[in-house]
Image (spheres, one colour):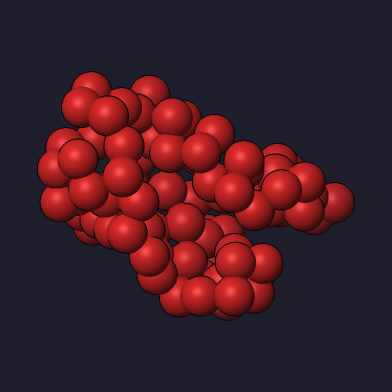
Length: 88
């Protein structure tokens, strides 16, 4: 199945792109997607996915809804990867 991945902030810088299409097997989860992206983009990408010094966690949006690592993906889903944006 095809998943469209959109990157914001640090993730766009690390991947050198704003979005891309990723091929995953049927029944894959957000965690499966993350594992594939870590293999593709390496240690710096993995480190950015972990909580950073300021304790920000990564935000996964699946089709404009909050997603978790356990969220099951479907063909043509769109996953946005970013840090949460805080207001003031």
